[in-house]
Image (tube, rainbow, N blue to C red):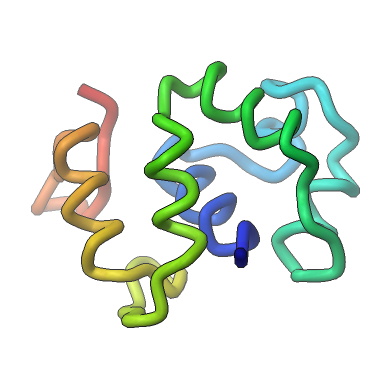
Length: 102
């Protein structure tokens, strides 16, 4: 799985820097950087922390990591299914072209 994509999408939706994202889940910011660049894969525990902290189902995180039919959204490659799932969890602000927490 390519968790790098899922992490970038979640950070974009939550409007967090890598450092803020890392602080929210209690890991070193360099870990997030390594995961997003594809140099490392997260542990199952890290993925579970993200799921719990941000109320994102594990299955959604996995889907965002697996899909191959990608499009670009806000500079991040994301799949169509991922966008549909994000719309279920977040409100899309068409003026700002950004997902906001419901």
